[in-house]
Image (cartoon, rainbow, N blue to C red):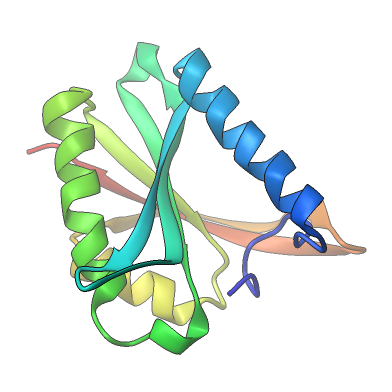
Amino acid sequence: MMQYIDRPRAKSIEDAKKLIDVFEDFLQKGEGINWGISLKENSRLLGTICLFKFQPENYRAEIGYLLHADFHRQGIMNEAMKPVIDYGFNTLKLHSIEANVNPSNLASIKILEKNNFIREAYFRENYFYNGEFLDSAIYSLLNK
C-alpha cells in the first residue's frame, strides 16, 4: 500500500493518530481535505484520497491516494477519483489538479491517464528520500 508513498509508514496506533492529526490540521487550515474509501456495503477503511497542497493563487491543488493492495485492480480508485475531481473543479473552483507520481508506479499512472490526466513533466532524481535520489512525474488535469 505504501510502496510508492515517500513518507514513513505508521508503525503504531500512535503514529496513525499523528497522521490523522496532520490531516485534520490541513482541513482546519484550508490546506487539504481527505476522504476515506470503503465499499458501499461495508464501512471498513480500504484507503484514502485527498486534495492538498492548495495553491489558491493558481486555482490548483494536488491529488493523492492510496488503497490497500487486496483491493487493487477492481476499479475502486477510479470510482473514488471521479467525485474528488468533481469536488475540486465544481466546489473548490480549481482550474487544474496535479498528481506527483513515482514513474515506476504504473498502476497509478494508468488510473491518472484513465481520468484524462496528462504528463506535464518528468524530473530526474529531484528529491532525496530514504537514502536515495528518486525521479518524479507530474501529471495534470485541466478544468475544461
